[in-house]
Image (tube, rainbow, N blue to C red):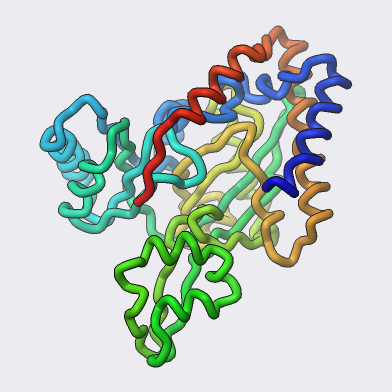
Length: 332
């Protein structure tokens, strides 16, 4: 990160000087606080969609003010009322980069998770199928937005050979070894386990880069019908112009027809077109992608300023950063 982002930050500062406002990017999504750069409530964002409930994975918020038994009871009521069974997804309502998110498969796991959390939690239906990151953008002056990036989020697995232990499989795998520190900690009590020959051992199921998922450019999945569906979804959110959807689909062909997808999360102005993390793309490609993104962010911000919008102040952003830095994180 220390090597990749400085040129992007410098470019963003130059754009701010060009547009005579360094915080103009906070007007890219007027419908989100500070355009959704950080510390946004996931539930508030999902509640921003109007008349598109069929495309949002159902969820509820479990308050941090309740006792453990009351939180467990609220989770049980949610699942019963929505006719859900385990697995279910639990994650912090305020959280970044997948930290604290877990796929919970039993009531005992749910109770353990709730016991270890001290903040508001989202309980969300588990949507089976393939996961994609879909980056959308639209200028206020445009009649229709566009899908700029599609990323396939692939789980990381190792294949057993009946001889090597899990630790050795992780260290010998050219992909898993890049996240060895995370995986060795996550599976600390199973590292000496011998994985049977031919058996797949799932290391990362969540579609988040920092949690071990492999991100691949899936631009070939683009279709006119899918883009239209994402555009209609985005227009139903007042004040949203740019960001990345985290989506699960049961069938890719159905998704290309603009149907059969569920939104898990919507990320704001600091989200990225994650197709650039495909190993086939170069560092220069990634930088060009980020430069184009920030150019578009400032153009959208400038149009919204012309429409009467007011960007966030430095003091507001400083307080936001301080709150983010002080937030206690936990892992599952």
